[in-house]
Image (cartoon, rainbow over the protein chains, first blue to last red):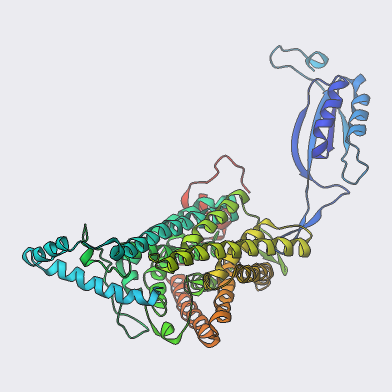
Length: 112
Length: 449
């Protein structure tokens, strides 16, 4: 099993969810986060005072899938979230040791 | 038109009557009663009294509603960790003003004959007896109770201005002690110079509904407090201003609209008469001009922030509307609609340029009340001279109110600082006054920030 962590632009969330559902993803965890990468921050003005916004709002997806699906999920997210402008986000893939469905006690692939 | 100055005579007459009724025996009252019944006054005689009294009552509850406006504006512009404290200060200051103005304020402010500077008239306000007979009423003015009720709302507005500037760092009780002095003594004494028939009114100074007497006075008192209190922790760092965005701009906007509504009573009621075609038409004219100035202030701030910052700043637009209102308050009757538009627009310009200016001087004004009430108040009072031509009197008045209020406020703040301290501890300030001072949060389900 693989854990896929993706940061994307918040407005892309719905589109990415739909695309992932289409390729067979049956669940995901979503959090609103703030962070910075190569986009870095930007400056805003509040009541005449300029200030730096160091952290940019993003949405983080965490998806656990069978090994065989991982590549397709990564490419689906990459294709759907891409705007070709700075700040599109990043995708990480990690190995997952085990999984357990709380209700039934099913393990690993069966639990997904 | 009845002026604020005329009220002194009307009230004098009223007080004599009240004394007569209190001291007089039942026997001496009986013939008066019989007489009043014999010659029932026609509506022509009592109509103006009823209309003006009604104007005061309607105007009074509109101005009362401004207390809600200030509370919402300030609750929206402070951070969420200080909202409960800001609301507590707002209801407390309004209620203290209500008691102090009865206890000493009203009779200090409208003393009748006095030396023009200070009246030693420390008497609580008394109302007319129940079921006043027409023959005993000041038919050329309005009921004392309605007059008191109306004027009381103005002093509360002054105190509200102070609370906004000093938000997020001042202790509750020293602030409330200052409110006691401001509403019981400072505002009534300086107010009597003009509206009580004092030396400034003799001089020809003109301030229709109180750009200076109400708004600048609040602004001066707040400025003195801000200087003694210092800025919030972390507001100015390495020569830069660090914004501390307000917790709820929906509340701030609602507060601004409520203030805008209340202002129709503030300026319209200050016509002080509604019993003739001329007077009630003037009230209508004042409503229209007041609305125009607010609109002009808001639109000016809208356009200016777009040009200067490339994005519209809502908080500045809200301040712009209020600055327009303060600007027109000194003379809402004489201008044409175009005149009101220009007066209000200048108010909007003042706000957009002086909010950052105060930050450069490291004077931390949380809600922008100093630009809105003090600077726009000075502008509005000066602008009256375009209609009266009496620049000297306007400038004298502005300086007199400024020096008196600022110096006394400064002294009181220094004394309060020395005696009990006016600022919360660093830890309490960072944690937020809601939990540290009150143990009660406005938004208990929200995360800290």
